[in-house]
Length: 200
Image (tube, rainbow, N blue to C red; front, side):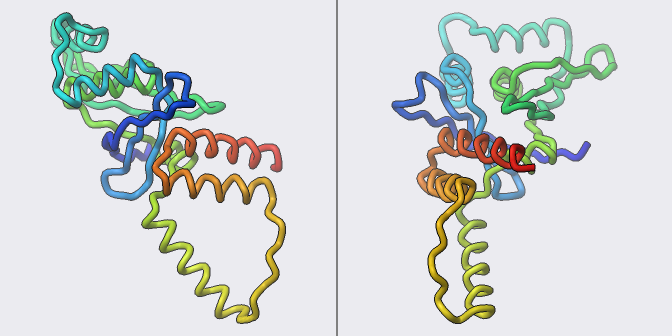
């Protein structure tokens, strides 16, 4: 399985989110973003560790880290390896007693543990290809190239055609990315995926 390393870009929310947050992961050697919708508790667990704030008592993810330590298990990395019907799946990969093993978990829990143990985070190429969102730089370049091609091919101004629902969603997605509203971008991405699958 081909893997791409990602870093945590940030956590974002909006007043209409109903308590949900978007965990935004970004390619280490690329410009795609992967927003994953997570709960407020998991977002707090990740944010506390990123800010190096120590709660008075161990939180759940601190307990998991301490449990790995107590059985001499080393977390090697975190892998987000599957996307099914809008739900991401992850694995905590570790070594204990010289043997490799893995645990199935939610990406939010895996990332909360990764920041505590300093483990790298990977995403499978198939997941990033399906759900990754290119950042503005790549989009700007693409639109410049597209408009240059159109000018060469057809110098006459074309009449504006009515947009399909898919084109409207893609335009809204570009706007959400430009505004860095990754929660909305994730929802629009899922709507586009669903619409594409209905048309095929």
